[in-house]
Image: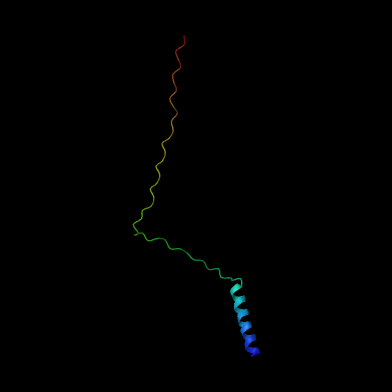
Length: 64
């Protein structure tokens, strides 16, 4: 009976260590691009702002 209890405790400890160990699994997942036929369109590009022009200068008052 003692051997069964010892074996059970050992198995539980082994599973606990295996679950908490530092894994060296370096695999990564890569997402797939969305399908082109989903009915969505990319957002429209914002229009470019017009170039700013300096305000016209007021002519100088005539000299007297």
